Image (spheres, rainbow, N blue to C red):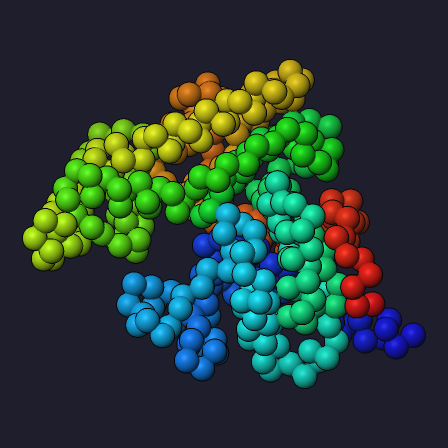
Length: 351
């Protein structure tokens, strides 16, 4: 009786635990946190001194006694303890003005397609350790499809590609499930590294990740456009060791990204080749949907459409597709139960 009474006051939480960013939503309130997945640790005091945006500001500027930890690599937990502390920080931030945090919330978390049982257990344990009462694990790509308003429940195929920070997931979905899928360990962070390597090889210039990411956002593209765009690229000259600035254009950036974009497109083709013909016909009619931060790269939809001969569109606000899908699942208990994955450690769930 008490459990039923107190559950009315519990806030259900949704989490998109990403390599680059973590987004958190609350039932009836929507997205309340959107922060980088970075934790700054003071090694002298063995304390966490910054999480999220505050930690991101320290990238490339931290002294030796401060370590910047990235608790998620390719969408999976690489540092369990730091991930748990990061989640607890976000939970505390949400419930800072709420005395009812003694009522442990139900938490829905999106996980990658190719996650192992050990990695799945790590996600559950981290959320439970941070204060969750019960954890529901769902596939991120399913949440993204729901967030993009695709008819995942229909007996017809829809194709979605989630271009994230640490991984790219490609899936064909029908009848509440993933029919064919492929996961690549190649995504937004790798595109930044492509630009860094290009600057090093072509100009003998060493640039940082933040500079590379800004160049990608400002003039990066996957398809040729009529106008030429340029931007300053600042870094350290590898020959003289002194600061140097050069002007780089969109053609050069596109050249640096070409191999990675081609790899992603080849993976999309390989998934289409394995898809049953009935579903391929549906995909050809409905088109392919792109989501995730990588979908914001200019011309990526045109490049994919040109190579696959299938219409391609970018979802509305592609960076929040997954968390919006999770938010919808918080409201639809029936759909949540249909797509929730089996728990990796049911005995540890606090009831």
